[in-house]
Length: 232
Image (cartoon, rainbow, N blue to C red; front, side, top):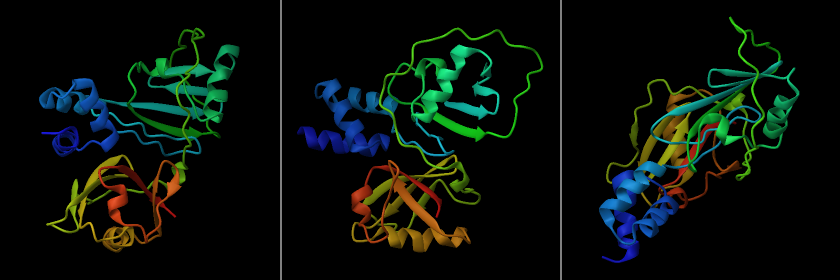
């Protein structure tokens, strides 16, 4: 079995992207079983939500960041803007980056949901100790979307078989839910909209890495990728 065939097997077994499967294949040095385990740990990456909101995806857990008028809540720890060192966190978010160490992240993937509440002040029941300054995140900054464009995923199943004999699989983030979609290679993104619009009474847009995917595009272009569905 050649490398490309193993990559295909990895993608089928884990539902990961081609890039993740290729990296797992390289790391495993041709060991298919090991590559599948590696790809299963890595997952896929997608950012969206808030004016600076984001999803970064990893199967094991979900992290959260909420920005308030007076500070930033990272998981259950609040970083008050009255502490000078914490202003850097706001500046990082404005630059579309964040300190991964504050989330306990040491790999290259995780699921993070960012929410903005600029008119609301966070109040703690008990004062938390002041946060110590930590080194800033030096990884890749990503362009982030708008949380007001998030949509509900009520009644949408985990698997949408638009074509039961479809030969193209891709994943869609709908709100906080990840849905697998099966379609024919000959179908377009517009065909996906025709199907999904039965669940909504407003306009929709599909995007990848902050760029809109036109309805005329073939679904083959997003095969094995993770894309975002949001309000137009």
